[in-house]
Length: 476
Image (cartoon, rainbow, N blue to C red):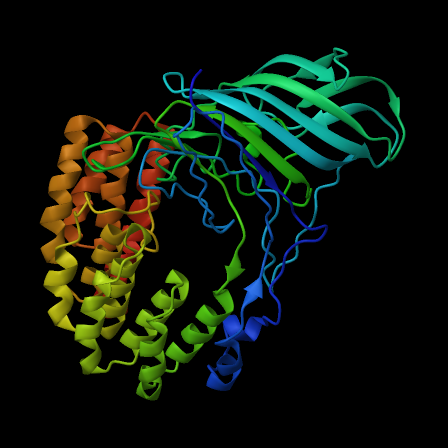
């Protein structure tokens, strides 16, 4: 296969990354105290340092693009067709949570994945080499792998190994007989040649895919006419087993290497180094909770920040100040160049908090603006269309957005596009216009024999009813 080959190496520390100088009170204080926030506005925190490299096997003049993205914002990011690999090997520590690691018989040191892709079959095929140290005497290696065709399993010297495999969504379902007993600390490598069979199709319960299971193949549709042909995987936090055999637990830290061969003109995106702005963002959010207009000048200053996270927090805080003079500023935010229209989302978020009715027409113009660049993730944090309907609802103008969303919903029904049907159902849920109940009744009848889809409809209907009730009681 002609195309690109990219190798990325990801090095993780021997401990879980954590926030530095970040106390729970900064995140969710009982009583907002600006004094907590001020020292953090200039603080930068390094999270995970990732070392990456690449080698191109394409002809002279062709180029491989590597995009450096935060490890917790892993999505397709380049302006052409995309191929994105994600293999979550660690979880950011939250101040108030405790991770209980899954017990393993081995300490995985390194995983090397080498894959190609079958677009028509929506599957991946290739090899994974797993280097590990037993932590106890073992003669069998237990791994996680869901619905795969296992072709061969060998040691590093080529010796074939016997194995048993049940293909189910259970832990330790791939058991490899190592041929002898290995002592604790005796390093070895096992190589598995395999082909995935799990198709990560539309899951109505999760618009972004089957809850991150396996590799997702995306193509354009009427709702997403500009959607780039792309392949990606998420894997958080125990779902990598759907596309690569491994000990699938976030507590098992190891280095990871990817080699991928893809057809032109696809590009490959890899993760890189991040110095976080999360602490500054949280500090601005804290100041915004005071709803005190005396901090407006600070918010305006942070609208110049290069970080989308800081920029968005400043826009929301500016809206919460309720200063009428900020309306024009928030409208103009949409014009700031940003990735996937994050500035537009920040503009809508700020206007929602401001509550100025003049923003209704502005928000309405973006309810069905599918041709504008946006992230393919159904949440207002990432999609300007969802942020727009949230803004309309908050401004008491759901009735204006309803006909626009309804028309898009009917187009999706005509095309029998399940992903788009549930996307617009989510929009109707967020709008909370009572006329939307007829759509829920229609879909419950349509999916009466599909338990998974029916469950998703009823779950959204419950949220819809809750929002309707919230509107009627006058709450936001």
